Structure formats: C-alpha cells, structure tokens
Image (cartoon, rainbow, N blue to C red; front, side):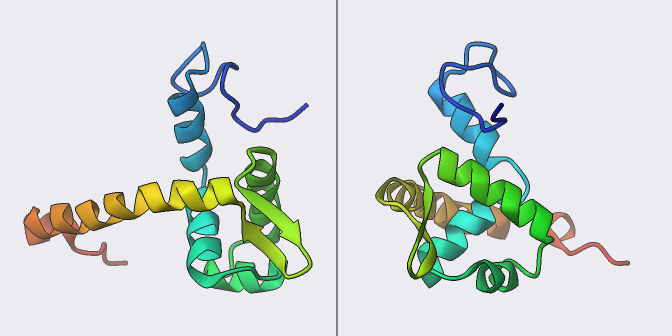
Length: 119
C-alpha cells in the first residue's frame, strides 16, 4: 500500500484529501522540495549525484522521496537518470516566486530571528 499523499485520500491536515492539502503533505516531507528543487535547477542526474546535491542525505530517505515523487508524477527515471517531469517543472515554476518572497520576508525580520543557531 502506498503512503504517497494523493488527492481524495485522507492526508495530514485533511480527512477528505483536498488536492492542495495532499500536495502540501507531499512537499512537507523531509527533502521532498529539496529533491524537486535540485532536479529542476541542476537537471537530470543519477541517484548518487542527487544524493550529493542534496547534501549527502541518507539513501533510505532519498529512495523514499523519489518513490513518492515518482508516484505523484513529479519525477521520473530516464536514461539520463532522475529528472523532473513536465508537471514537476510546472510546480517548480510556481514555487520560484515563493522563494523570492521568502527572501524579502527574511530580510524584514529582526536579525535575532534569522541568525543561525550556534552549536
């Protein structure tokens, strides 16, 4: 049984599986956005290359995210390796303005709220 969030099925935040909630559940999973972002920015790549692009995440997590993103139709495996599908690239294009907005938001916050935590 697949654990990939799908519209029309119960997901985090929505018992009815409203499409936007299914998408947010999927993208809210650890490294899901990072995988999509790296495939759209850097182009197709092998599993190992993608793992390196994503700061050497564990193979288990990468396998899980790739499986979910493939089941969701956002990523596919080709002769060149993993790549974003047309649907995945469309989603990425919608997320780019959110990234721009987030930089403006971060710049407006007091420095104490945006400073990196110290070990």
